[in-house]
Length: 329
Image (tube, rainbow, N blue to C red; front, side, top):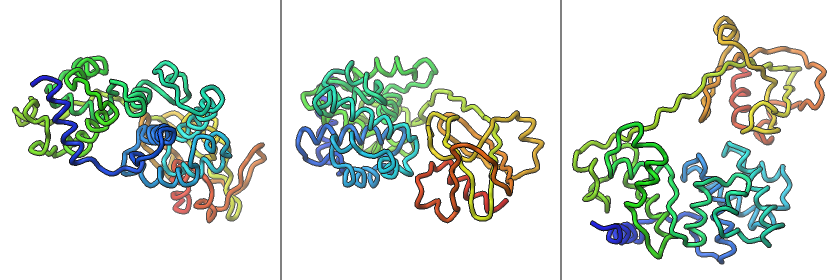
């Protein structure tokens, strides 16, 4: 079957099965640019079902690019609280400022200009080019990668490299409805070609799929070794107040309040009799000793926080996890 027929089948399926998502609402072209920009930033490393309520709240509080460029950081972070990866929010605001100042409030329409914006990489730039400007580009996200791996039955390490998968995108062909087509392929990956228990008998690509013919749906994942790092967090407490500091250790939590922490050797971690917790991040497994000290030290730029104020204060989930363990020490 040629790629033209494949695109027709995929779009036919999409027209009849697509989900209603708030960023797909019919709005003006300028607002479409804003909706796409915000949703693509939020969807970086976060699932659609998680993003939906945050997107709705974000748009209600910050309705357009001009407001985003001028928003106070505290309000921005409160809108983002719970989504994690707070650098995305900071980069989104920086991007809004750049677009306002350099592009008269409209998204630039070349992939090179898009990639020059803070927080916009290859995937996000291609998604914007397709969805906003209807350019014939297909970004590689997890859903599209999974479809390609199954259609071509890719199992070897070299077969699942980004470059090899990019070359395989020609399978999808092109269409004049590129804005819908990219979302249609992603939708098939999310709803039909799922990681577990794919719904092959509902899939418009099953006739083309080698994995379906072999009845073998395992998806090979590139070996990714997360580093394990060991830390000691000092829980300074005086009555009902706890000491936090502005983070300068982890890029993903830049300037966010955290407990004072130092990296330690594995031996110290294993030999410690203090309470320990584990926190798994996308690129690191953190093993943390909790060392409680009932006295506040003299530290510049410290933040004193009552435990019953943690819900009303903008904190990374990272810090909240430690707080939840403090009462058990």
